[in-house]
Image (cartoon, rainbow, N blue to C red; front, top):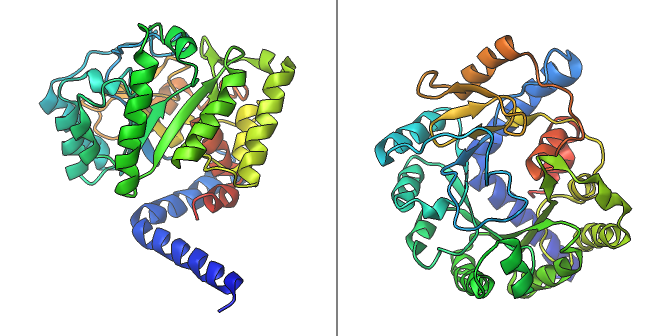
Length: 356
């Protein structure tokens, strides 16, 4: 059989298996896309769209002090709940959403994180865990409950990344050892392992090595620019080295040189800081005590609490009446989730094509 026919059959089989595996979630996505398209683009009655996933900040605590971190000293904080109350919080989220992105702070500093994730897995959540990787060898049981792992790594230069994280010498080496060790475990179980790289003017040259590290180890490469006080650093556009890097990443995606998270179009928006429309309610942002932000964390406005109103959608509806619709702050923060929300509304089929 000709090679092109074999390749075509392989691609079709992969697409079929993806849709079969994710059919319940895809039904929700397509139904919400139709509804959002009607309300947002045709009727133009609102910028509030139904969420498809929850971003759960399981803790504010962290064992590192990355200088760009927006959660290091959050303007709005909340206390962690007990294990039982945290599990009850997740149960309330699960009544509406099946996708859970667990972040922090550093999730693995919570002693009960494995128990919480195990409970979430039992509820049927598709779980993505984002960690700095330092504690994985002490909490490796968390890997039994997750579907995807994301580890932050901004540089392969150990001394530089130690300085970025304000950590003792050897911290980066330990992170890299954990990445390789547990990345191998994720690959063996056919679960994606992503390296998330936050780019600023000091690490532009280092990103190429991170990308090569991902290629050599078959990790997914993900990236965004560092924010300054929750605001995009537009000064990067005047940096020739940064612009060359942005072009390199986008071209690497188009030429499939390595696995890169997002589409070429979303990377253009994210890295070249193009103007976009944000629909932040696509991802419900939930704090440790059950507070749900409306419309988003950077605007520092809490819409309600899931222990008082046990529905994310109802919280958004009430918050909209009280606080108004989503404001038009198109170029405030170029985060992957915000860019995704723009494409979800304005170029859905391009976005969907990324997941074939």
